[in-house]
Image (cartoon, rainbow, N blue to C red; front, side):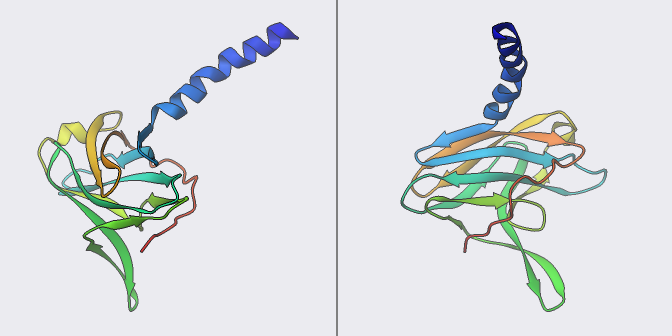
Length: 160
């Protein structure tokens, strides 16, 4: 019984380690699961996604983003205007107290403009992305580039 429990623990350890390896913390904030889809051929832009968890009793605000792989990184959201879904830049995004904010396709996202080296956005690669928060300060995360988007495990929650 003890041997089988130890074997199970040994087998699950890499799974738990891998899950925790993609979490980045600053103050009461934790940024998890940063990813980007592989840059399609001839596409001038690509988006990055992640989830921000706020365990604190006070809200925070994501003020901006930057990366070395693009000339510009902007905060964007998708909004319905009439019958059309449109993307628009936003100056900042509120992170609710004791809540989470999901950056995902067709929701809030980071748009990377002026890609400097397309090879850095290929499947299996990683690139740095620095998020600047009003209260928590700067958090640098490593964004995993994936050919196929991961399954959405979080409900899309939007803060205004």
